[in-house]
Image 1 (cartoon, rainbow, N blue to C red):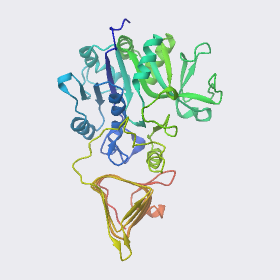
Image 2: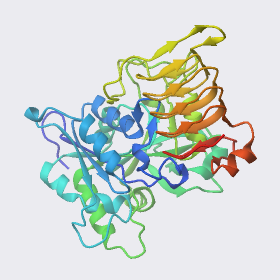
Image 3: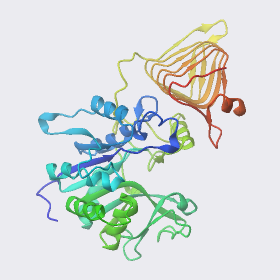
Image 4: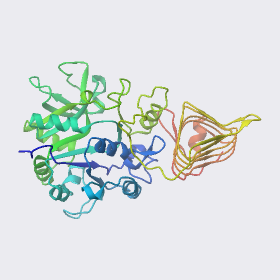
Length: 417
């Protein structure tokens, strides 16, 4: 297509309708993109921050599953200057094209084609809302325009042994940017021409020429047997037309980035990966650096005062080491280590919290011991409770225990000693 003089007109679509079954019980009362992360953020904040920092200020967020918490957060937090025509608009499933809800990510876009027709963009950037990373999408858009692609798929290099965990992009021998095949979790992956021990895994982020996207999802809507999935159906169809190219994430340069966090990308789709991603935040030199003010992660955590640490005598020391503690929290004569503590929590005297993720408004009573745990909002842990030390006892109390031994307590769940 012919682009307008100057910068192309870009619309960003954030796919935020994910149910997140593997994150239960954290998704029992909210959509996956609304799950809190890193003390004060929601997962959707990472996608939106990347889009906005890239300079794209017209954004729609497509929601569906248990979307109230997500819609509320986006509406309250993500406000743009309407004078300049900028917006972040949450759009719930509306049954605009019939009596069905979204049948997949491609169908979500098909049912929301009015947003594209109204905005009339040259380029549509489509991103997921459930990964933790930094990315400048403008660099990917630039490559997309230069290549003449119909779609460009963001990809990250992974060891070839992990190919069965991803949608794998195989590139053409004569052009390492053109996609020759898109295979879902292959058992016999093909290594990269410049790195036979690596594969390119799809990140679930796409840049489309707008007319190509509209045509692709419209055709897919009536295609018998389609799962109406962006990665599973739309991209392979464009691969067959030799219109699909890939963008290697390792080329992406972020202002303020370091060698240590360059190329960081985490799929937090399981409880264990969600826990591990939190642990990435709290080292002295964190693997993912929240303190990069040149590429900030935006959010709104409410009107809370600074965190406070009280009591330093008679055997009580309010302290937190190798931890991130959010505003409004009070550590009162307790010891917190290697943990991420959400906003407005209370950890009372003589308690020990180690390798834990506490979401907002958790209260830990006196003389408690907690380790390797995720505790969701509003949970009250009674005095003298131990969590994470006896998994059989944890299970009998109704707590989830993951394959890696992380104990998970759901929102508002009752806890007994």
